[in-house]
Length: 283
Image 1 (cartoon, rainbow, N blue to C red):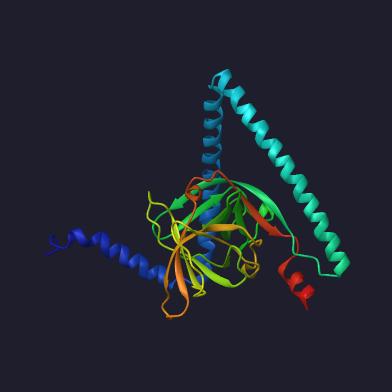
Image 2: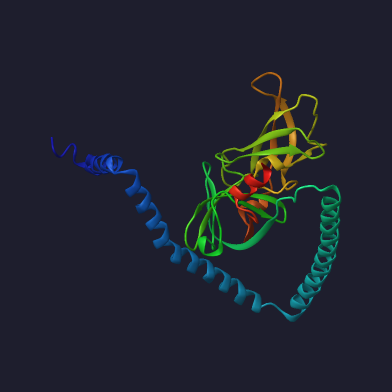
């Protein structure tokens, strides 16, 4: 009899452990989980630095012709960036002049903390990045994470030296958005995205008079109602629509960028004003 159930001993042991863990107070669980991340953080950051060092030495092995061509490409990109910066500063000065002339409240500002990606956890049920900056660089939970192509996600957890970012591709991710050229808000949510397929999301509560098609898609962008996200950042392309569950509004598939799974650096948008101060200014 004992020989028949001997192969079930590991399962019984796991069930006993889970039962004991369920009885542990929530505060102890939270402390244990946080301590595990802090213990693991040096290993994650070190392995990321080693990958960067490996990339550096592989680039050192390139020929002079390849380096010269890369230098030319970089010079062109720097020239375009300098021009874009001048245009941005001109527009910012014009906005400040109009705000002063019309006595409008100052728009909420952000400063960006650039962070290197240390690890990726990409499964069908969650999509996360671990970045190499945390509380030591002023990162806060809930902060927007962006890159040159638009929205990356939102900071989910903050530790001393690292932070966990929930990607826009994750099923648990939701935010307010608008279709480009529209002011009416819609809701964006992530969907389960298995590996090795183009990532997609879903847009909900789309007004019934809007039309899109694969040949004529429309960009979905962040809305001021999204709170932490600057307005007008690209989320993806809405390529098709179908009736929603309420029979009035529509829902649509959102094609997301494939770059989200291979990003090396991201920018965390940190509001210049604390949330409480911004709320008081609005009263």
